[in-house]
Amino acid sequence: MAATEQLPVVLPVTGRRNVLVTSALPYVNNVPHLGNLVGCVLSADAYARYCRLRGHNVLFICGTDEYGTTTETKAMEEGCSPREICDKYHAIHRQVYEWFDISFDHFGRTSSPQQTEICQDIFRKLLDNWLSENTIQQLYCNSCQKFLADRLVEGSCPKEGCGYDSACGDQCDKFLRLVPTLGFPSSTERRPLFLQVCSCTPCVRDTNHLFLELPLLKEKLEKYIDEVSGTGSWSQNAVHTTNAWLQEGLKPRCITRDLKWGVPVPHEKYKDKVFYVWFDAPIGYISITACYTPEWEKWWKNPDNVELYQFMGKDSVPFHTVMFPSTLLGTGENWTLMKTISVTEYLNYESGITSFFPASPASDTQFNWTDLQAKLNNELLNNLGNFINRVLSFIAKPEGTGYGSIIPDAPNAESHTLTQQLAKDIGDTVEKYIEAMDKVKLKQGLKYAMAISKDGNHYLQNTKFWKLYKQDPASCAIVMKTSVGVVHLLACLLEPFMPSFSKEVLQELNFCPVEHLSFSDEKGDRDKAGRPWDLIPSGHKIGRPAPLFKGLANDAVQSFREKFAGKQDERRARAVVAAQLEAIKL
Image 1 (tube, rainbow, N blue to C red):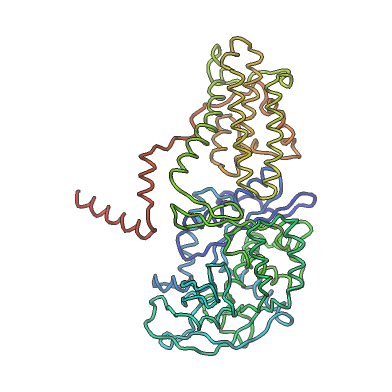
Image 2 (image 1 turned 30 degrees about the horizontal axis):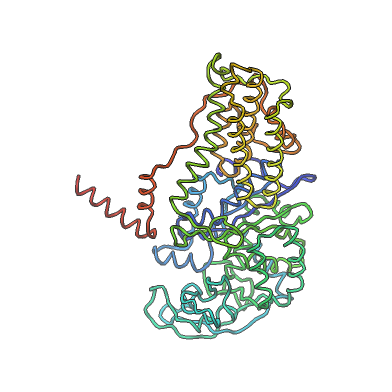
């Protein structure tokens, strides 16, 4: 991430496919965990890497969501200002994503002058036609002399048949929906909880707020959704959630809040209020791009030449398919609206929900250590790693037992029966891989890439190359040149999912990753996939092969299970106790 920011600014290019990728902006109020990474970042990173691999012009944007109640609350907890909280945790987020080698073109933040300018400009364009005023009731603390924000109000959801007892003031997470009556009014119907900041009992007061009139924008919104949900291959869960919102009936949504930390409302009557985070936060995608380049409108006001792909967890869907597009449509400007939305489901960690993962469209994913062990040992070590190591190790053997690390010449490879069949199978699988990845079906694309490795192992076994080396040297050369081409192909196809693996493989092939990591139609890479013997030239000298994966033993699995058992706070407490016991021993 740090290295990519030093590169020339990426702008749309006429005649090329221009892809704008965003991943949901993580809250800045805490250290990011696996759920943040998987739910907000990894899928987007895999798709952005795939688009670059295919030769598309890509801009990958993300950043920390810094305004709102969560930041104010965290600042109170740590006894500092909201700005200090944002500075501290933004740096931590950045470090975490750099460690994971996430390929952002720019990782920014929403507490910027650009955010204020763009957010207020959009508000002014909505003011005359699509906003309304309303007086509502909200819980107020006389001791703190402040209205209680939604996240400080917790209780049972008032929706009939729900009864979820941990709903916040404006959102019930049980059915991934906002509460029935605009948010704040329903807050007074709940059991209040002021997060132990104050022990006083709150009262109810009237307060004036501004609302986005979603019912008036319904026709524009439905036309947009009808056009893009099919052509953009929206994931099934995104379509289902969006349709549920529309069928229930759109309601006016409050866009202002009685807070201090946020984008100020540029209206004399509401000058002491800020914008509600879910009006403000999606605009952060735009402002973060504006921080990256002053020519941001070439990305965000260029729908004929830019395709917008957005990645998020399923709890964020309605804000990206209903609220955000309605806001932009209401301005009357020619915005680049989302073409495709990819939604990640919940990851159940050892039977407990902890985060998100790119699961099937209709169900959550169950993570357990035994399954991870099986996948690592069987798919990565015994399938992928075994194939690559067998091929490169044999080529690296000294002449007389191998090829002295030199790729052999292999004329007439297409006439070799088993090689011909392998080439056909790989060509077909590559087309399926591209089709799946183009539709953002990442798990399916990964399966197709791994299937090529499996075909490669079968090819080695069926040709018995170790016998051919003495008995039929010409055929052995064909098998080896073809197989090493498949190794290079796998490094390319798997780079979106395992970039460090691909880098290692290319190093073992003695290739520069920047120059040789490509699968572009313009360069003919796609066509060459059906002729793997042509992927690496004869006479090329490979590097030194080394095992790419290590097995995961049973005792290691048990150790990981115990180490990561329970909640994060419980693990920290155990670590403190262990450190104290160790100190006593010393």
